[in-house]
Image (cartoon, rainbow over all chains, first blue to last red; front, side, top):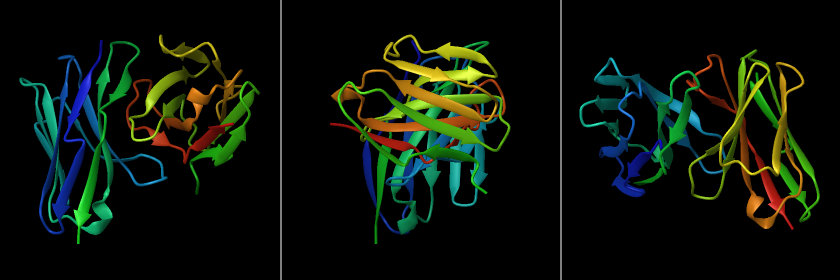
Length: 113
Length: 113
């Protein structure tokens, strides 16, 4: 069945340094890969997404890269700030005709001031 | 300008006592989802409506039911809550039928005593 693996499960980074979170997916037909940020006690919010016809997408300090051949995609956060501390979930869109998102297991990112 | 509204924010019920969680949206999206999220885990899709068409996940227990009386409202009914059903329940919407760009509500934290 559909599977999205995410690692690491926890990540601590010094403020100002970069953070990288990686995900792999099982279905080579997947074509949409979003990243959600969830702060403690709050709703998940979409921060960036990428489609399979693009290899990289950037939005200010956040970037996502996609390697379709290897079936993995990564989130890159540069110049990290304390407000970047949260749980990050990757997801992949599976299925044909009744597509649905399958989420990774999450990464708890802590920015150390 | 709340877009996906869930009430209540916190719900306490007794073991075996039916409970209903509600979700409303002002986005006029055609798809509404219910996710269950347990502590430190990824959101797990329970079911979704594409317009009036109900789509149940294969591993969603029969104890969980849903109703969508109109475009704006969707309800999650738990017929006989068990201790294992204590979780955050997230409602989400999307404009397409493919799970893209989910807009989440703030969630209802359900406790079962």
